[in-house]
Image (cartoon, rainbow, N blue to C red):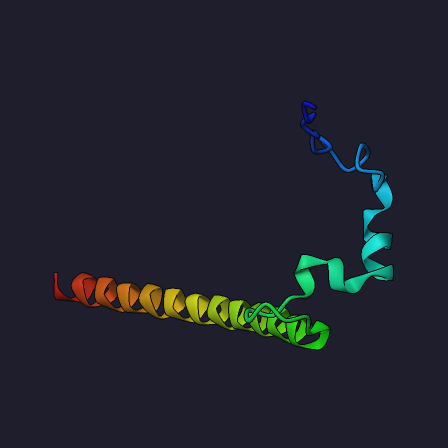
Length: 87
């Protein structure tokens, strides 16, 4: 007897999830890949904390980048001011 290949659904609608797939994950959070910690264990709180930490780190880095850009601009302005005074 020949076995028939089963094709995977092409999109969420064909999978029966449709536009309400987030509701499925609300009902079954262990199925949501966003709720997994790096060690592969389901830890909803840990995954949320990791996302919050990464967001805070990104915000802190953006603030540092802005401060560095400001310092560079100030240094260039001071150097230009010195060069203008030396002429």
